Amino acid sequence: MNNQLKDKTLKSILSSIENPEKHALKLKRKSLLLTGMSWLAIVIVFFLHFLGFTGLYLLAIAAFSGIAYGFVIYLDSARKQWQFISPHIDIESVKKEVSSEET
Image (cartoon, rainbow, N blue to C red; front, side, top):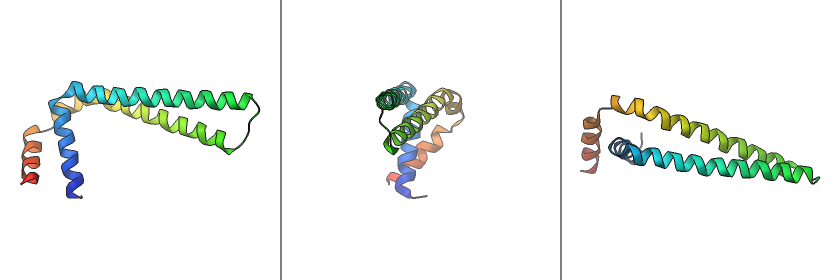
């Protein structure tokens, strides 16, 4: 694994364990943003369709909406599962690895 990616990942895990409320809020905000974008895209598709527009761009916008909502489901699942996963992570090992990467 790339050392830079490893370092970034470990720091993210450490931050998520030390600040679980902040981590959950970050995931919730991303989820709400993607939900809004997804609904807006699907409303635009229906609006344009009922106005008589056709074309691949309607399909592309609808596909974007579906992909965005798929990320919403993923983020919500990750947020709900984190509280059960985080106690099983060895925080001292993560801290040791982060400090060894910084030196």
